[in-house]
Length: 86
Image (cartoon, rainbow, N blue to C red; front, side, top):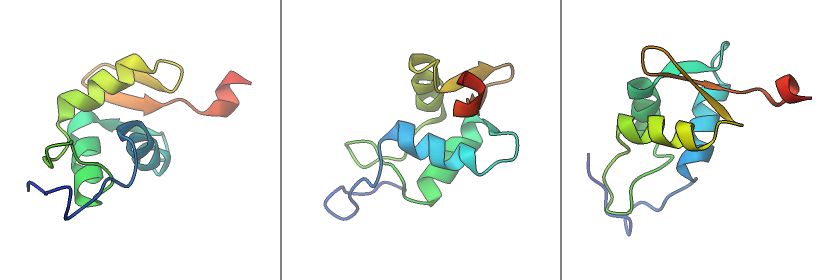
């Protein structure tokens, strides 16, 4: 489902989109494929070329923000609750 950005502007950064999707889960954990799917079907984020986000992008973004996300076994990502850091 490729979208032209002139037709559909980004609503959020990918990190924000991941946070939105993960925050709605009780354990704040999902598989990268499921996160990518949710981000795409909700139209929260598209790549600059208009293509939907790929699951590997989710994993890489989580890796770059270890203070926000945990990478877990089985290609799962968990949102770190700010209350855990206080």
